[in-house]
Length: 315
Length: 271
Image (cartoon, rainbow over all chains, first blue to last red; front, side, top):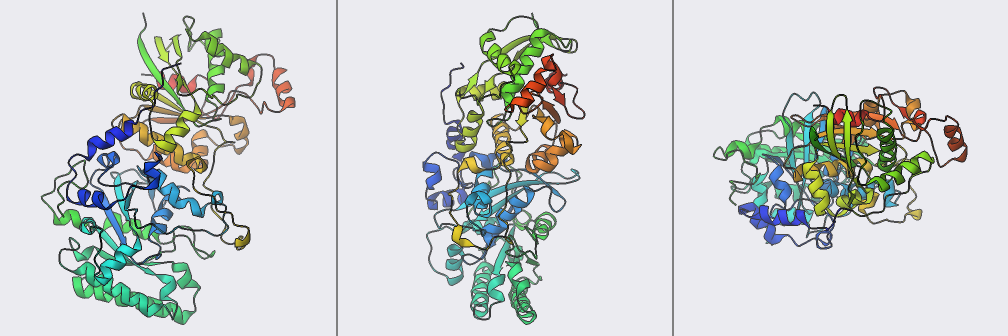
């Protein structure tokens, strides 16, 4: 028998690579409470920029931030992307890796038979969990380079605070790292007469806050995601029209700030009906991240390619 | 004097067919029935290998290897195309890989073997592959019978675990991976599908197939379909039928594109 002493090599390596954490890393590190999963020695729910050796393997990622109220379906969108690749190539792309597979698996659990429930469930993202998820994809023809995507899976209350201008202990400098920042509108609320106006108002406040100078590197990073589109499609025709008009109003607000009409994506990450397949609309999200200029990188020409995706960033 | 030292890792979750393969492989190498590769001297771990071989010869279903970490196996081999080599092919338990998925903590011995390996054989058993089965949103509307099960790493689909293991191996080795042979064991159970092993992997374990196919650079992988047992040896009738064939090697069956038990190893060892 080969001598077998288990050692925490990954943990040791992690400590080593934390050195040199800069603006955004340090800010996030200071606000992240150690998750229960990490303290118990099991795999973490995602990447913490201030404490992950895995980041070193991610070169020049495209960063997607989905901003929206609590339970608008942000995490479901990330989970559905992974779950969809778990069924084969998707949207002309291959899954080429992820350093956060355990994090995706945790998030997808409530959608699976193994969870013991009979209706898909996506647990509320805790405020203490400020994690990034990673996905590496490649075009199915294998002619283009690999693309590393980083998703900020942050709790909706953070965005509610941003929208309302409330003080928050969470450092918001991560927003400046967003190449693409989607404002998520809950399709279910847009098609419900009692919820629509309030949802529009909160989205407007959020867009206004995100458009303020210095919050994003460029407000043209903004686009709109109408989530839970299966609920919109299941509504009456008049409700559908009003839901679309409401999303268009938010789009108009963004256009006034940026001079550009933002894309509006209609997404049913995990449809509750048979109307849509798993991950409906996410092909357009992947197209957007592949084809649209990554604004953060374009606006910071001084940043040289590096193995640290956050290198050169200063909050 | 050998032409070189090689290290091959057998990677797989519990009950994926690693020990069965090793038992049958030892028999084949020991008896020298295939000139392509045979033992050139008795190995130091003869006793352990004989145990595995004996189980295989007795048509016994293999119990899960419960030893922690790795059991060293070193074989001096000679073959027409590889010359004389010393092959380190440790038997690492499936539980060791399960723990790597669960906690990401590497034992020193397994890490050392991983760093020096120049070939991986990843094992998948069609009957033990766990799939990411989604809740049917149409059929199930009755929440009354819900019983929430907290997420546990062991509930995860096989494809997620194996992709993560390869990610970990790649990270430990500094983003370089050796050749990877994927062995779909118990191939007899899926032979009726009439597809090639690579296609089976693409259809049944798509995340892993994409992971392997989508890498940039020099990563070479190849799929093999092999049934070292030749049938379900937990079934008494099947055992008798297989035994009636006489020559134990006759029961080994291969999928399209696979020439025999040695194929994955010869491909890994080829220049």
